[in-house]
Length: 315
Image (cartoon, rainbow, N blue to C red):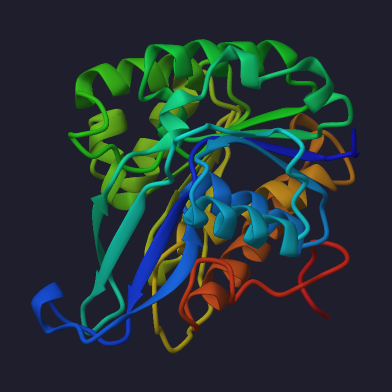
């Protein structure tokens, strides 16, 4: 089995991005892209020079073939991808407003709902420096068991980017409880500012990050779009990093690009997270905001992520 430093568990979709802005009824056509937050993070990590493995379940249809080819072309190890006979990968139609912000409409069955403990094997984690999870893997009871097994096998950092939880995925309060059972075992949790109240009952990004740390997270990060990100860590330190100014084309996957960059930097960090200085934490987050900003300048979740040999800011 190939060596991978980042192991990502969760779902993959096929995103259909509009050729223009506006409501679905005004769209003339779509471009097909690989999507799903965990899939994006795995591809982003690989593009940034850190070997990544994606653990998921795909269908047997041509859209699943497309996802698999996109993963492989990005350099992601796909030896932990299971194909479900007669299964299909879900399609997601995206609409963009004039600022590049998006709305999602999912269609069709989702093979990744079949993710279970049989998909999580000890050898997946043999060289792992970081495990990455989202709420998508926690939509079903068998998914909860799969995540628990992954947490048992994890060797390095445990990182979670919960994302949003559409009502059709899971009852939000139940998902909140499932996520907090993961947060208490996490080193890093990252969320967006519009997700903080659901997760922490705090509207203020910094207070939300501090609430996550009080719950047991070592480093909590809240992204704030064009305003950058705020962070808090165990020991009481906190801060903020700005985001570079860019011309926004499509915000789809910006948070995933940020997460892939943060995890990639930490996987290659000069010291374990607990021993990193606050300045080094801000260096990691500056790199993540740089990559996140680059990602929104073109269509598609990872096409704007620069290909690198090492996940570091350019000189």
